[in-house]
Amino acid sequence: MKAITLQIDSLYDTYRSPQLMSDAHSMSVGSPVETAVNKVVELKTVYEQKYEEAANLLYNIETWLSQIEDPEIRSIARFHYVLGYSWQRTNTAVCGYPSYYTARKRLMRYLGKEA
Image 1 (cartoon, rainbow, N blue to C red):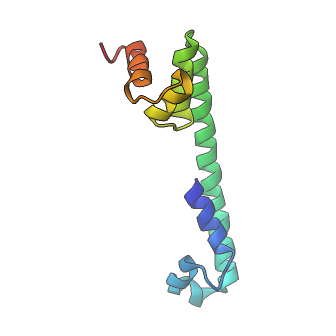
Image 2: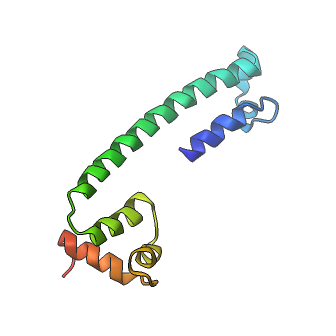
Image 3: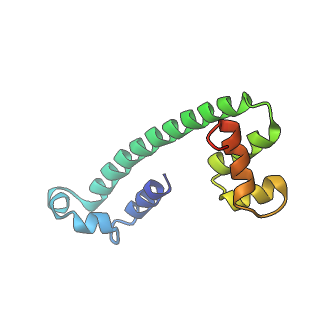
């Protein structure tokens, strides 16, 4: 989604946009401004679809997290999978010390994937 946003922003500069400069066919058909506006509209539609997908996925994750009774497991899952923390950073946030294994092992045991 960040990449799409950057791509949209680059299209507002019609004289320097790499997308418009490399698209020789569209430059000969219409004005660069018209081409840029069409691409912005198209990319915004893609962005809105991706945003909706991400919002639905986050809703599903939050629904699943709300069913976990253990607050520590819930926090580990939220920090690692929702917020995108590394296992070491997740462990620091939840347990108070940096370790790759502790938080990961607790979650995997909860999920039944590790003995």
